[in-house]
Image (cartoon, rainbow, N blue to C red; front, side):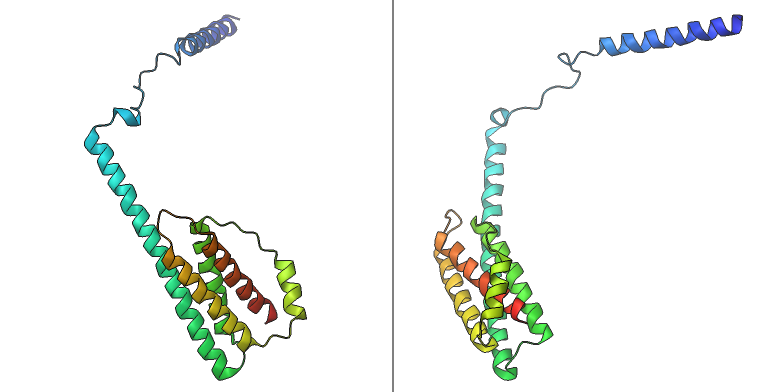
Length: 180
């Protein structure tokens, strides 16, 4: 009996200690100081942050232009390959998929969203009697138009024409994937 009573008292004391500790924790009087706001930073630190932001934006803009150049190069390779073979090989279909992926990144960086309906493109691809050679020429001309629009943009602008050009490239790339 004494054994049970001592355990009960010990259990009661532990619960009481935890309750007191929990009540003592007040969220308004935290031990950690509040982080400083952006206005509290020194002027040189703010300037450094701004320079880093500008450099990052310049780098992202240059990467977008590099992606556009890469897409143009790939479509030129595709045009040469289809001119020789008259059809798309497995490696060329993979290149079309990489064009699609790169152009989606470009469109996203331009501020465009994903609004294409694959079902419509698939149905158009099944109805169309467009040859792979003509489709690749269309892809290349759409890519050239995209690059022209990208060169007109700055890192400060959003170009609706460039977004439309990227959508045109994506439509043709998806068309090519679905026809093969």
